[in-house]
Image 1 (cartoon, rainbow over the protein chains, first blue to last red):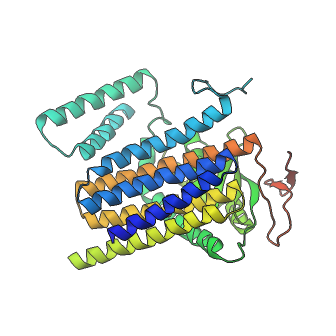
Image 2 (image 1 turned 135 degrees about the horizontal axis):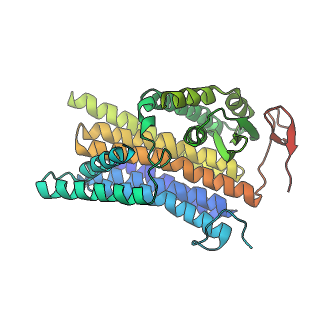
Length: 92
Length: 160
Length: 122
């Protein structure tokens, strides 16, 4: 059953990768990459149960934290062209 | 007071993540929780937005209700995705939010995004409206009706 | 007892996997960015919750179940923030949403709270 679950998650990841490659806008790719991040967390959790090593969950927690930071970093870079930008005003 | 709550939350997080309960590790956890709370206090990050601990009590009734809303909305979106003629009517609608605090407005916007079929695309705190994108016109009108809005406002009242 | 635990866990896992597959199918089927986000949120919220909840039941009352609960909470808190950020950025950059009314006619723009319609400007 864990095997079937990980297979389903991998198919989902493949579908998300297809969307990330097809685009067409950068936002489609971001939605897909956000899904890929969630999928990676699920895959890590299920894989931890498959191999009987739940330590993988700690990596899953890290992924959950980094996923949102990554998405927002890409958006900020796309908007301002600079990650150190303070925001609040329009880019010049 | 809020700083003490932050220390306790961080310590609980430490204990769950570590899983080894020796004197040295628990001591290290206590020290680093207090240090982080002290840093956050110096940064003036512990206010009602930084660590809204008083909202936890109302969550006992709000979260199960929200979960049930998510289940219902998911079923609607699943039906749309699987229907052969893709029966969508995407709608942009601006809805009023009746929450007074920024945490309440945030919870409302996040609840809208969390239920599949509706996304809060922009929110303005000056006239407290939320721009909602819904995948069907029915979903948009259901959001504009304001059941969730009243629910979040009641939740906000309990957090005082 | 053990048997019932396994059956419940597999039930949640199965429904969760079905939902994430439907969500993955949806993001390839929907016509524009905003509608794709709705499809993605099917798998990112309820699909992920159900899979992790199934694992929680399988783990039983241990520390592992608590960690899974933390992952669920983190997903529920951070997921909408990322989705909102993407939607807002797309609107501000001016990605035109596909708008349609219930009977299939093209939609005009943003419906205001008083019922008037602000036309979409390019």
